[in-house]
Amino acid sequence: QVQLVESGGGSVQAGGSLRLSCAVSGVTSRSTCMGWFRQAPGKEREGVAAINIGGDSTVYTDSVKGRFTVSHVNDNHTLYLQMGSLKPEDTGLYYCAARAGDWWFPRCHTTRGHYDYWGQGTQVTVSS
Image (cartoon, rainbow, N blue to C red; front, side, top):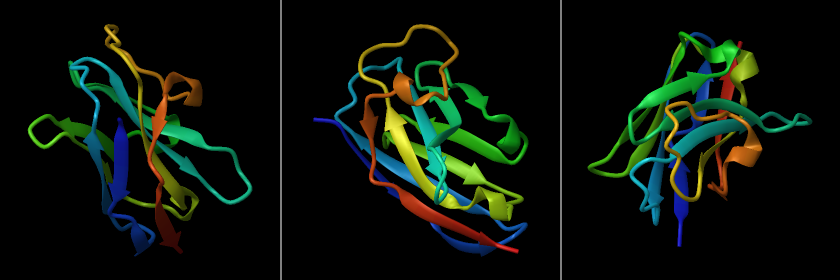
């Protein structure tokens, strides 16, 4: 059974940094996609970043390019999202997600339908 548990959220002022972690269990594929999504109040869940854990190829939504970095550590099977230069519009509930089965293409997607498993989310609040 796949379980994803996020942590590291909190409140920070604009310009600050946070690192989110997602503890992963039950994902046995060595080449599949994992991603970070966020949902602000009244808005749809949007993809933020994704990584193919087999080759570390990453993709980001335009609004976070140059500010966020997604990574995965195989040894402890943890997904990270390092967030810098945070803005109030980055506020939301952040979810990690994993795709079932193998994904042998380098590029993953940041669309919801690309993922099968979801964590419960961790709140990030950025004040101006």
